[in-house]
Image (cartoon, rainbow, N blue to C red; front, top):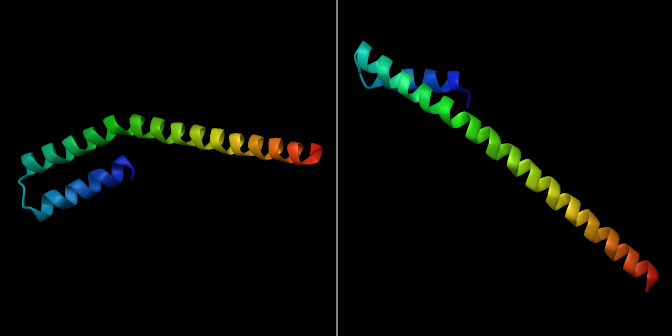
Length: 74
């Protein structure tokens, strides 16, 4: 979810709950700020997940090649 989408959702929630303008503005700003602070961490975790997946695929391929070599020598 993009920060803009989160801001829009927070705005809709604030309107649905009849918050006045100052309260609504503060709520939306707080929600958007939290999203902006969390975003780099989420991007980092996603990148780390891809690195781990690549290592696992690489290790599986290595294991397959070793097994094929052992069968070939057998």
